[in-house]
Image (tube, rainbow, N blue to C red; front, side, top):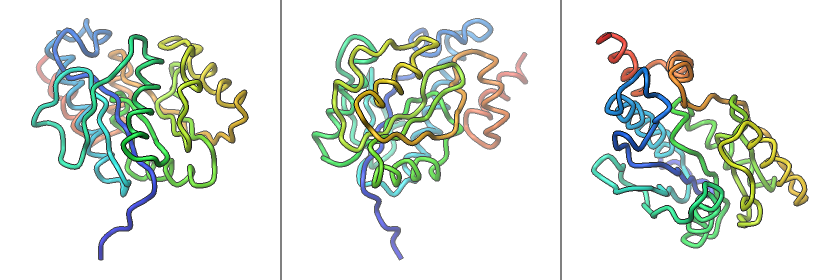
Length: 216
């Protein structure tokens, strides 16, 4: 029996894992090549989790060039905009234009995310306006919108310790009914990487980190 397809779509916003352009806060202690390898593993885990969600659509909003690492079933769209707020707003807009259904957006920094959590986020958009996943560093790891609008993101200060609070306040000030998901740790620093790998045994990311540790 085929699994029923859920309403809505999942978007992953990511960078091509090129040394010197991704996960630069991991260097040091890791080299740019090692940091890019960890980024590639985290992205692969993330895309694999999304691929197992019975969503109506799956989109990769990519900075850089796609390669054979992109799984089947993903539409790839280029990122647009200058600041992160503009790029997030554009990713929502582009996905919603392709398929006018609710959108759940995540980054490539939480390889511990599960298909079950993403499926829950999509399901919640059936009865709520927004779903918000706070991150341990004060940002957010997931944002889901039943009816995406650029004004819900544009102007929110990004990549700061207040980003999550500011984004959540923007949603609530717009009168949206917001559901919170559990807080997760983004992989930004080496300490974050160790924490996430310990919580995500068996993932590509945990394996990649373990191999680097064995070489030191």
